[in-house]
Length: 202
Image (cartoon, rainbow, N blue to C red):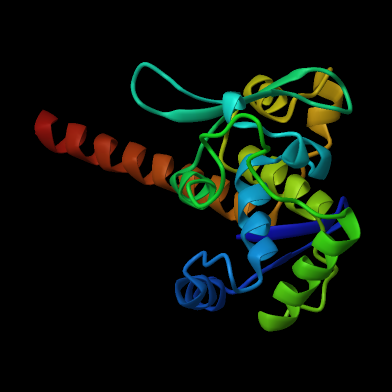
């Protein structure tokens, strides 16, 4: 997971550290319960107010069996459509996804959530200030780095225009390396094909 703390700086959590931590935690509700929200927000891009306003009727399923969230964002009143990552689906299954008279998550104040995120960061040895905004920004950056179209990202994040989405189109070292690898692979494939054609001509 890569967490972008602002528009000009990003840092990476060590995959083995977060894997060991969450495997031990097991998404357990009694241990740092709000720590479940950090990976959830990173995988859905939900803002705090949208997480707070999420009810079971916002969760649906496509014809091919993929669960999704469909909710109007409080900030823009635009509908966000978010197909759920399997980990996000696993986390949500621990909460209220059946009783529509209550929200999915028993959220407390924004400050309380920040404290839980900070506690998680301390447990993982991270000095950066982890917030819901950081998690939402991480979602946007990771979608761009994965090659998802701006139009799809805008729909998932409930943006009112593509200019808001383009903020996340940062050039990361990882993306540059992957792009170069693809270029080199295409070149090697082309050289191999040319060599094979010459041998066939002989």
